[in-house]
Length: 72
Figure: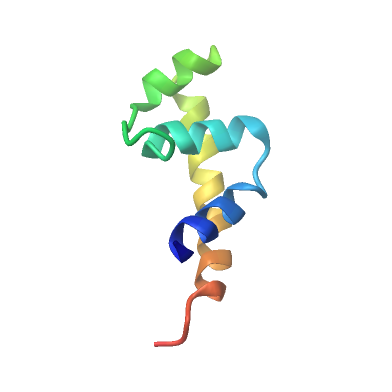
């Protein structure tokens, strides 16, 4: 699907830790959304670190994704 291809290409611009945090937080690979605490535990950091990673990633995605959408 076009949406999945776009999401994958957006994820490709992230470094490994940010991509992992986004995939885990939103359940991209397995459909299971995880808390920041759970993602942080996987990364060996506090919940604040994945929260910042995801926030930064989403702010990076937003303009890129908007530019790829067809005009209304």
